[in-house]
Image (cartoon, rainbow, N blue to C red; front, side):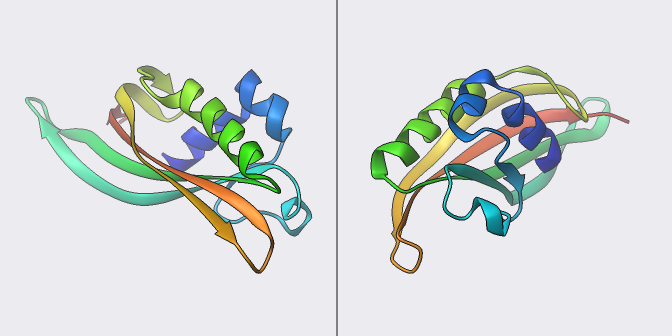
Length: 130
């Protein structure tokens, strides 16, 4: 699932315009540390059932938007929100994303790197491909 979200955002024109190719699963590359970038991680994953048995999943993903300015981090976060919030339909390895919704947004600052971060948490419910 996390790879599907990464690929989905990495292909979005609004995200590309702000981050280029710096949309990563897991941690950022060292070369990305001082550039506008996105890191995507799994926050939680739950199996769910429907009338046909297993096959539904509820995933929470955390998307961290980094920039050297507060406005830069917020602008990247807005592009992510525009692309993902309310999405339904195909997404990579998912047969069908029933819905994607923003559940949390937090602004942070890292003193060690002097970088701003807007952290978004999305809840995605979908039917997995078999």
